[in-house]
Amino acid sequence: MKARSDELQIFVCVIECGSISAAAEQVGQTPSAVSRTLSKLEAKLDTTLINRTTRRMDLTEEGKYFFEQAKLILDQMEQLEERLSSRQQTPSGRLRINAASPFMLHAIVPHIDEFRGLYPDIQLELNSNDLIIDLLEQSTDVAIRIGTLADSTLHARSLGCSPLLIVASPAYLKKHGAPRQVADLSEHTLLGFTQNEGLNQWPLRYVHGDRWPITPAISASSGETVRHLALEGQGIACLSHFMTIDDIRAGRLKVLLGEFNSGYRQPINAVYYRNSQLALRIQCFLDFIQGKLAAYASADFKG
Image (cartoon, rainbow, N blue to C red; front, top):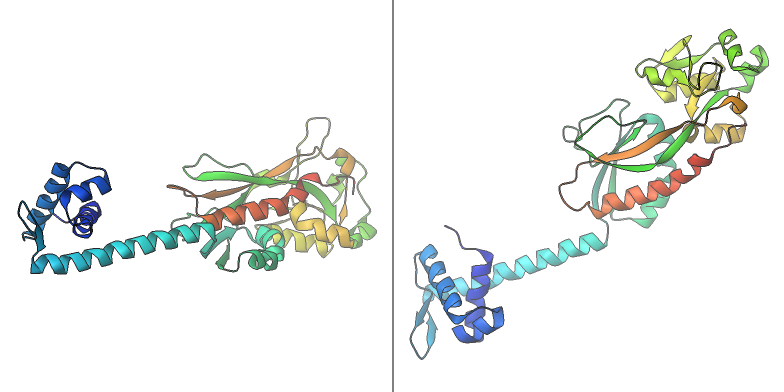
């Protein structure tokens, strides 16, 4: 059996206090309990640490050596606890974030400079993946997922939501005209997704509901690819507000059929493992990015 830290603390306390009774008062135990702890410690070590009589205590040579080493160990433990406490108060360490490419490029990367200014002791590792990943396998602290979450053993935190907007470039609209009614989309080139069929259900109100199913003329696995196709005038797309807001403001994309938009907003969640208290560096990032995403919940659907 190995000595425990509480046994080391009692042993050191006895030596520093000069008696078992004084140490017992210091640690809030009875003298007999302290004496039993010392005897148990000596039995574990198979050596005598203290020569005790009714009048005095003397450390043996082994006891003197053990006392110095025990004090060193306890001091190191205290320093470690102080450092951990300091790390909890000052966010630091490596933070590994995973997100789909569009979210990484449009909702995280533009704010990195500000985040680094606030938390210079956090080392960021940014990884992009348009598929659902295993956090442990990919050594990821937190992953950002867009859309409704499937049942999971992971912890999730809502970061907000983002509207889906129907958009096209001025060049496409100049050549093909703009749809005036939802049904007019059947006369246009539509851009969609290959791997998530739910993204090919556009949030548009019509006679049969508020999700208009499309058959894409061009499909892609990444939202960023669909965005670039739209910018190049290849067709009409349905994309998240967070990845098109700058294009819309700059006039590179125009919002279409705003009066028919059902108002559906994609949930944005952070998922992570949590066995105990969430690390402060993760909390700080989630609070920061949630604030940045707040603007996406109030998009103007009218274009």
